[in-house]
Image 1: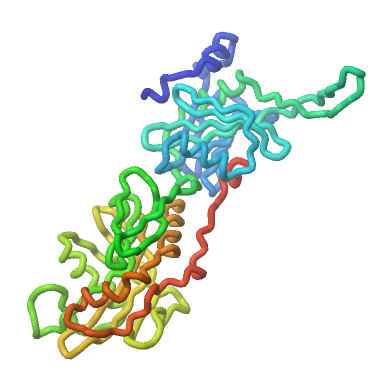
Image 2: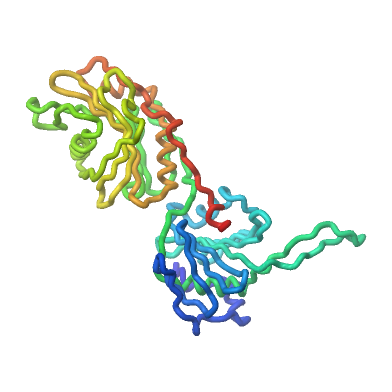
Length: 390
C-alpha cells in the first residue's frame, strides 16, 4: 500500500475547492526531537515528553495533535482498542484507503481521530476545530428542545493539517498504549495462563511450565527447574558451585540457555527491594525478585526474574527461575500482557510431577507451588484518552 500517495475522496474534493497547498511552505523543526515538517507561515510545531506533537496555526483554535507510534495490532484493531479504552462516543467510523477516521465526541468536545500506518509506524492524529455557534433545535410547536455547540473543524482544515503531517521527517516514536488481546492457554496436564493473542506468538504449556512468546517482542518462561552439577563430578550439562540467587542469573542462566542451543549475555542485575527470601523458607537457601538487562537475539532486553537456589545432595543443587522480558524501549502494552500471563499462571496440577521429572534422582523436594503473588503486580492500562485529551 502506498501510504503517502493515497488520498481519500474528501481530501481530493477539498483540494479542488481551494485548500492551500504546501508549495510556498517552509521547513518547520521541533528542537527537542528534530522532527521536521513543511508548513505555511503562521503555523507552529510543539512537543511534550509524552510523545505528543501539536501543529497549530497562530491565533487560531484549529490544530492537530499527533503521535508517531508502534502497535503490534493491525490498524483496525488499534483503532477499535482506542474506542474500547477511551470515553469517545463514536458517531462515524470510516475505513479509508490509507487510514481509519473516527468522528465522535469526547466529553463535550467533537473530535476526529485518524489512524494511519506509515511503514512500521502508525500515526494517530486528533483534529480539533474552532468553537462553533450555538444551534437551537425546536419542536414542531416552536419550543426549544436543546441547545448544542456545533463543531467547525472542516474538511478543508483537516486536509491542510494532513498535508503538513504527511511531509514530516524524523520524530520520536513511542509505543501506543493499547490493550493486548489474550487467550486461555491450557496444557494437557492442566497448566494454564492467559497469554497474548498476537500474530507470530507461540506458547507451550506442559509439566507445570509456561514457555513462549515472540523472539523480537516478548518472552515468557515460568517455572523452569535446572539441575546444577557441582564441579568435579561431570563435565556436561550445567556445572557450578552452589551460589546466590543473583549470581545464578549471571553464571548459571547462560549455561542453561546454551543447553538449548542459544546464547544470552547478562548485562546488569538489580534485586528489587523487599524481595529477599521471595520463595519462602524450606529448601531455598536464597531467593529473590530481580530486574535483569541482557542481550539475546541481537537485542537488549529488560526482564523481571524470580531466582532461587536450593541444595540437593553432595553432587548437585537446584536452580529455579521464572521470568518475563521485553526489548528495551519495547511496548509497555506487551509488558503488561506478560505480567498478566504471570499473574494468571496456574501450575498446581503439574507441580509435583514436573519437579520429580526434572530432578530425576530425588524422591522428595520441598518446593512451593506457584511462586508469584498476583497482588505484587499491577498491570496498569494507560488509556488512549491520555493522548487525545491534551
